[in-house]
Image (cartoon, rainbow, N blue to C red; front, side, top):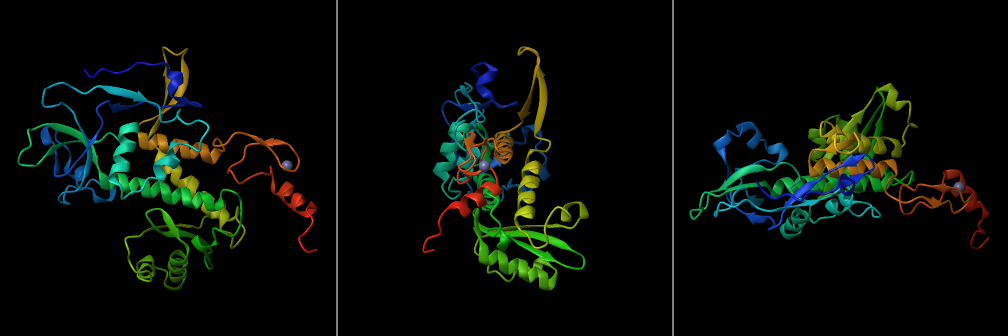
Length: 339
Ligand SMILES: [Zn+2]
């Protein structure tokens, strides 16, 4: 058995969430030419499902791996790390993850060495001629790139609308009539939003009613895009016609929920005074829990309102007033330049 450090639960919690990740003390390696270890019958469709990044058919793609059993037969030592508990005073590890350069293999390896794999990883073998039959566990770098980009895109959207400003989200939302629908979409290059390309795609959508034709309006340059359409009265009644902030905030919440769904489980702990905690099943799920806590306003310490002095929890660093009311009243009080 690998040696595992034991430590008190408290070290690994954030609020009622808890997560322990184990990283190999020796670290991960970047390797090419990996193939699934079929000893335990890895299902073909799991392995070859391109949309989740488990693709083995791109010759030479890099993997983040560690040996399951080293060639000397000794299993690796692991260190327990606490992705939810670290950097309590900062926006959180999810922002560090989203800020990784998805093209920088060394930066991704460094993150994995500090926080472990994003998921469970797959058992793989090297197909190099000099391979010694060592079994590895790891994830393809393309999987990491995709997940970094997903998180970066969503955080970019959230940063546009989190302070409640009304106009910055406008390029990413289009309302259409008969029937009333609101379309949310963005073209991005590795998580950086492209407002004009997004506007073009959304406007083309309005004319042709099909994304397939809309997307040809933007030359493909390695960008990704996403879209979502909302049309239920329960949602539309909550939003002003033509507004962008409400639908974008909803899209962000919905996407974070999808990422957590089925990946966070409650447990009552027999050796911890029977306390109940919620456990994300992977590092990726833990990162989305941090995103959810940011949405809840967990991210920043409470501060006094710059106008009325009431203590409140700001959603962003830029927010200094407890409410729109205080922001407006403060602006009215200031003498206008040149007046
Ligand atoms: Zn106030």
